[in-house]
Image 1 (cartoon, rainbow, N blue to C red):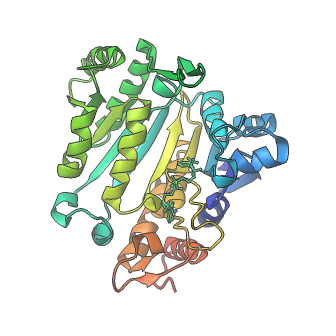
Image 2: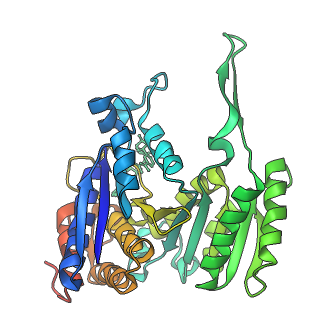
Image 3: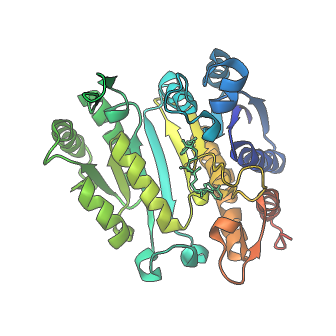
Length: 363
Ligand code: NAD
């Protein structure tokens, strides 16, 4: 197959981890006889520095002309002045909106080899394998009115949490479709005891659930969910929730796995096109040191192969290579455990490529 993939390395460790993702995709292409054409474009702080905009028009055009997008991360202290008119994160929000991506899929799977890297007890972590499905285009991050007004000492700020029936139903439908291919359970997370938008969410979620009688469905309030996520995480299959709740819960869930450096994600819209990115940020504290864990990005590449390119066997092979690398005891610093073999970013990418080729010795 031939595919065009746009690369948005971004800021901080973004370029470091994207380079390893590309290395693995190139190895997949060589091994399975595909041709992947890569084009690089600017986003985030590096785009602000070069063009003044966190999302230049050319970047959006490149993404629209491709089959899939692989993103590193955006942001960093250089661009974090809250008074700045343009911020790197605007690039991300603009990209999701501009590409019509409304659902963020975040798989959270605990690798047996990494149980020791989490702060939670091993018996709590056994069997954890869930997807957090986060709504991306509505809710508190986009509702209007939004902003600050007034003068000291009477300043005020406002954000609006708003949802339409259509936004909720398309996300819930995806949740049920995903659950059908898994353990057939959907947990819809809201705050219906307080928020009107959540009461709409719950009503629509149940209407969609009626179309999927083969899938079990439960409602949980977001505060209770945050507790159950660390008390009984293995009970969850697909968690579907609104934008900000999903943002927070997915970071919490990353700690089940031990590090944000292990968690991939896909942002999907109506067709097969998707934006794939690790859930972590630009990690300015370790950027440029060659120690960032590229596995979240490599696992995002596996999602890209499966969802946007329809290459399920190749995606399975990448995930199996990551499993094998971890089982063999290789680790980056963020998931290091006693007795492991410590690898840098590039070495970890090389190790995955070697295991992808069926080699058993990644050193
Ligand atoms: P972060 O995810 O960048 O880092 C949090 C901690 O996790 C840091 O200690 C970091 O070193 C570590 N970490 C993250 N990814 C890692 C990896 N692959 N390997 C090893 N360790 C890793 O979050 P932050 O520090 O809150 O944010 C830094 C910047 O990133 C901010 O400007 C923020 O706005 C931005 N950000 C961007 C995205 C994105 O691009 N999608 C997401 C979150 C944060």
